[in-house]
Each structure stands twice: as C-alpha cells, then as structure tokens.
Length: 147
Image (cartoon, rainbow, N blue to C red):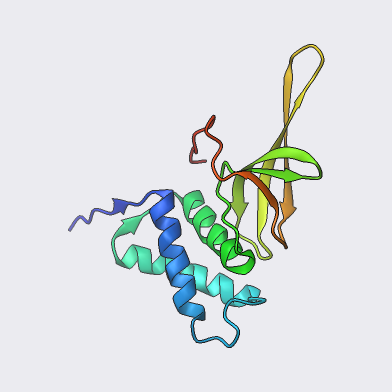
C-alpha cells in the first residue's frame, strides 16, 4: 500500500513547531525559561515523529530550521529565519541555516567587497544566546533554498 506525504513548507512547519513547543512547555513553571538540552532534543524527535504520523513530509533542513527558529523565538522573543539579515560584530550577515543544537546555533554568511569590485563570501557559525540586531526578517534579494 502506497502512502503519500504532503510536503509542508518552512513557514507552516515553523508555526507547527512553535505551537508544539508552547504546548509542551505550557505546564512548566515560568514557561519557556532556560530549557534543558535533552528536553529540546526529545521534543524535536517527538515533533518529527508526529509529522510522519500525520503524513506530512519536509526537507530535513527545513525541519531543523523551523524547530530551532521557534526555540530561539520562545527563548528570546525574537523571530529569525534562514535569510534573515542580522548584525554580528558590526557586520551585516545573512543567516544560512540553523543547526540542530542548543543553545541555538546558526551558520551565517558575511559578504566582503574588495576595491576591485569583487565580492567574497565567507561562512561562519555562532551561538545565539541573546537577542540580536535584526535588520530584515527575510532578505528580499534572496530566496530560501533547501540544502
């Protein structure tokens, strides 16, 4: 018997992650404060299994991005997406992906323009353990692509 899974896009997936985490922590005293790494990893697994059970599918990196983006929002009250423009160490950066780690870790890209007009891009990673200066939620010059 064949089953078909509905492919769910990043934003609805992220909304589902946010509701799942809010529900999972609704009975916790103080709410979503200093979450435990093991608890988050377990909730990631539970959420992933629930999606499969409901016959939803997603790109693996979309699931990582959606879940850890929701974790960051609940913890720091700030939305960040892949392709958000942020400032790190006084440099304009673009978030590429979230990593499946806690504290929330991202990969980001820094662009450097040289005098000859050439553009060099370098990819870094960093831990986000506090709100960050966000310039744009989604960079309109890029389109999110699955890796």
